[in-house]
Each structure stands twice: as C-alpha cells, then as structure tokens.
Length: 492
Ligand code: ADP
Image (cartoon, rainbow, N blue to C red):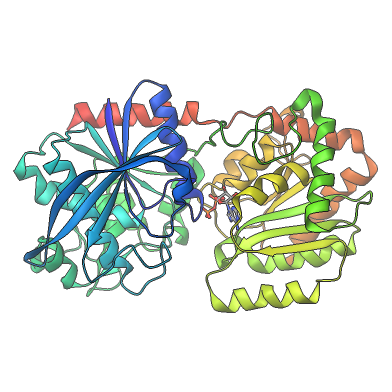
C-alpha cells in the first residue's frame, strides 16, 4: 500500500512530544511490513537539520492558492533516519514556519490551515496518488475537509483518510477567515452542527471536529482513551461528535520505536544492557549521577520526563520531588513548560533545591539526557490528569525502570499494579498504579514502590524484569493500522 503521513512533527527532526515519536515509529514499522511510506512536514527553521540526510529541493515551484491569490512554496526532500520526508517551505511575508518554534503563535490555526492546503496541493501537483493519507491531530484536521470538498473534484477521488487524534485538548479553532483563505468558502454550509461548527462556540470552526466528520477512519492512541473521549469530559466537547461517528472510531495503542528506544543498543547511554545483564543498568545510574552531580549513595532514583503542563499532573510531580527526598530517595526531573506560571514555579524550585545532592531539575528539552535518565533511574513517575497513551511509562518498562502511574488513558492499558490487579497474573504485573489526584494517593503508592526497593530488592528486580518482558514495539499496533487502511480502501 502507498501511504502518505501528514503531520506537524516527526522525531527526532521535529519533536515536541509523543506525536513526533509516533509519526516516525509508525512510518518505520509500516515500511518494514512492506508498505511505501512518505511523510509531508512543515519546514521549520528550528528543526534538527543534523538528523536529515541528503536534503535537496524536490519541487521548487509549488503555488498554493490562498485568499484568492497564491503563495509560492518550495518543497524539499530528505531522509530522516531512512524515512522519505518532504518539507514544505512557504515564501511569504507571513513567515509561517520561520518563527523559532513549532507551536504557540497567535496565528497557529492559520499556519496549519495553510500547511494542510499546501500538503494537498503538493500531492495533487506532483501526481502522487496514495491509497491512504494518514493525518495527525488538530494541525491536519482540515486536510480531509479540503480533500473531500475540493481536491476530490480535481483528480483525487480515490484517496482515503485515516485521522489519528493524539490529544483532544488542542482542537484548533478559527472563524470564517479560514474558509476564505483555504478556498472552502461557503460559510453557511460549514457553520453547521454536522460539519465544522464547534459544539460549544457557534461562531467558531473546529479543525479537529472537521477531521472526525470528514475522515474515513478516526483513531486515538489507546483503547481506554477512546472510551474516555466518548464518555467523559476528557473528550473536551467532542464526545457527541464521536458518538455520531462511533462506527469509524477506535483506539490503537502507540508503540515505541525499538530501534531508538532499546537499552541493548541505545547510542546515548554509556552501558548497554538487557534483561540477562540487568546489573549493568546500575552503571548507567552511576553515570547519570555523575552527569547531574547527584551523590552516589545507596538510594533509589525516581524520575519524571515530560512536558510540565496541567495535563501531566504538575502538582503531583512537585509533591513527588519533596516526598521522594522525605522518603530517602533521589529525584531527577527533565521537563519544559510552555505556561509562564508553571515555568517560573519550577525555576524557583530549581534554585531552591540547587544545593541538594539528592535532586536535579533539568528544565528544557534534551533528547540525549532523556535516554540516560530512562536507563539510570529506578522509577518513572507519570501522575497525569489525563494521558491519551503516554510513552514515558512504555519507554520506562523497556529500560527496566518501574512505572508509577495514575490510572488514566493509555496508562490503564500498559501498566498493571504489582499489588492490586485482580485480572492480571502476578508474573505479568509491571508497576504501580493509583486512581486519585490527591497527595495521599501518590504518597501511598510511592510508599509501596520505595518500600519494595528498600526491603525486597530481589522482588524489585523481578518486577523490573517483568516490565522489560513486555513488547510494546510498533509491530502489533502498525498491523492494526494496516487493517484500518485496508478496510477504508475497500469500504468507501
Ligand atoms: P506527550 O503528551 O508530550 O505527547 P508522551 O508521554 O506521549 O507525552 O511523549 C513524550 C515524549 O517526549 C517521550 O519520548 C519523552 O521522552 C519525550 N520528552 C518529553 N519531555 C522531554 C524533555 N524535556 N526532554 C526530552 N524528551 C522529552
């Protein structure tokens, strides 16, 4: 099958979070399974050009219709760790992708509406006719809308769309200017409940809703989250739309790319190890302490890696730092915050704890360091308020780093509590789980986890090895996507 993935991220060249990992990992596995994959991405000025091989111009005169005129774009082609990627660069005063950031601009909705239009125009003009276009998150929600309302009538009538939602919180909103810019026009038609009109704001168009309504198949990134999205407020207002389209909506668990996340061959960790050489993990723990200037003593390390965002349960992360110290453990945090208040809060904590030899807070994005933390820590904490899938607990399991998680979203599908999990055999349990978002829930779970580390080291080791035995690589999940691609190709 010929599949084009259109996304705003692809790790490691453009990565703000799990979306980048998924786009890369899924593409790689689909290619291994024999499919032809191409990716279309924006050409940001701040992406990691050192991860692109052979970047060259592939299509220098792409004119993208925009507001009744057209914007001149160039399309570059390069290989990101073996994957063929096309990067779209618009040449206009709007400077859509030369902002030194991926997201967070006031006109993000216009930037990515343009990206969808440019991606379709590129597919059309370069005569690519994929069987399936796989779109991701709100940034590409308008692509199926434009495909089925405009491009279908210009020779793209056989293309089908699979749309994957990674985070319901960010849906992409815009007013009628989006319609005039993209050439969709017809305000009265799109401002209808069964099309793009937002379910709560009658004056807004909702990109993600457009993606759900128009795509042939819609997925989210774990089975439990697909249930939450429909039946709880976690669907952020799209529950009703998902109900109406439930026959094409499902949840497929993300995998991890075992080429990149693998303690046996990880290029960023000094000592490789596997389950039969688990003691070598301790050497990475020592290396981590050396790098972060933490004292080398007989204590467990609890780690947190992720965006410092309300979603991630920052109040519990903050509490866990002090509770770990109180319980005689060490704490390592690697995270970056976009909200100014959270950012200054954690910078304040960083200064406050600066001289403490048992804690290190690294504020920023650091891919290399994240690998060493997964390899060196004993526990990985994921106390999220909601978590569509969550990759850090899956990567933690792969590295023998025991997850302590809250029972939401994909965490429910991947982590099974060592002490209480009636439907799961003892030898398949792999971490610690709590339900509530209060300090008490976190503390009692940390007590159980740290207690095992201190009092029953053999049992702790057994639990870590049971986690390593889980296979959350992409092979199973990618096959599920292939089934969906096949289904939409033949059904519609
Ligand atoms: P998200 O909600 O951000 O998508 P996920 O758990 O799905 O969360 O994915 C997070 C991914 O981003 C993981 O690969 C994690 O290692 C990585 N990551 C998050 N924050 C950082 C950071 N500050 N530095 C390096 N890697 C990070």
